[in-house]
Amino acid sequence: MASATRSSEITPITLEAGDLRLRPFTEADEAAVREAMADPGILSWAAGLAVNEAAPADRGRIWLLPRLTGWSSGVAPFAITDAADGTLLGYLGLRDVHRVPDQAVAAYWTTPAARGRRVAARALDAAAVWAFAPTAEDGLAVHRISLDHSLVNAASCRVAERAGFRAEGVMRGSFVAPDGARHDSHLHARLATDPAAPAF
Image 1 (tube, helix red, strand yellow):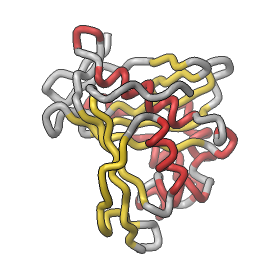
Image 2 (tube, rainbow, N blue to C red; image 1 turned 90 degrees about the vertical axis):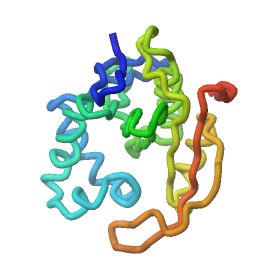
Image 3 (cartoon, rainbow, N blue to C red; image 1 turned 45 degrees about the horizontal axis):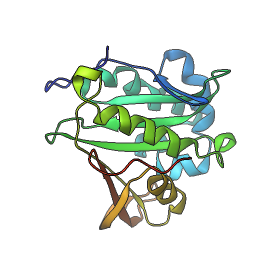
């Protein structure tokens, strides 16, 4: 059973989405995460400053540690994996669940080998459908999920739109790149009452 009470704890859950499986991270994922953290795109847009400033050998561990314990603090961090062989394809996270009532914030990345298969969009849609479901159905009972991305990161914009997250505006100077440069960001959101995402 998975649910989010009005406390911060979320019961871990595994979601199936066609040929994708979204599951909680484990310590065994460190090597695959470390390999992902060698990708310039992930480092630029999704790894965070602490990971970027760390030695390459330490990046997987530093990124992974808070995802191992996130479920107890209002975060639902999923490893996106190939349902057939378990290969790590990416990450989909929902954070700040109910920090603002009935809302959450999404983030994602995919490994270079997984790109071009709409992995992130399909995972984002699956996580949103789960999060919108009522707690009686093991969902999180949120009404709104938002996300934002640098305007320079056009691929992330395509992911959001494919998963039914409408563009709502521009957040000026909101993204700080690892080199300290500031970027404007697109704000996207999907509501529980929005139409389902188009078929993938």
